Image 1 (cartoon, rainbow, N blue to C red):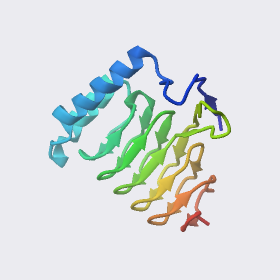
Image 2: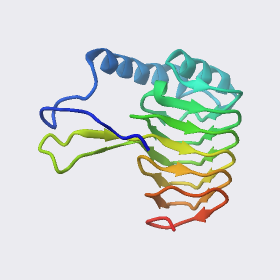
Image 3: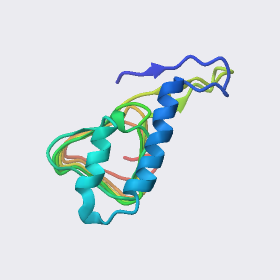
Image 4: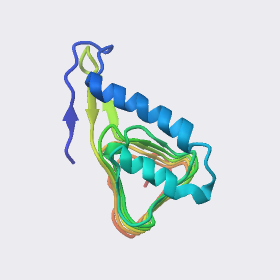
Length: 176
């Protein structure tokens, strides 16, 4: 999986440009004020705002009103893909959720970590891909760079640190 390392002079430097940071703050307020309070049937409204902020949405995915999306322009969702209640798409890098895949409530999809061997603790990002018809159980944690195969099932509260093959069921910490 492609890994990006952002050069920072100190752990207090942002890896994002000023323009990117402004866009991220604007996104937070748009989601809070225009989307987070909407009822479930207003999915079209939430998808509208995600598209405005650069998310690539194909067909009719579902995004719960209490889902959190860090950087929408790094999110791709296909037809009938679902981001559940209070799920967290920490999209510092690309997240792609294929058709009919379900990300259940409070799942955390993480695309970023840090290089703890360096004093600046540079940000390292790597994309996450969730295959078609996969099911990610409640409160699972998906680490950066992981690919979940088609029709795979991830048990609730699992920590997925490695790729999961298609048609596989994994559970636990680490998921096996």
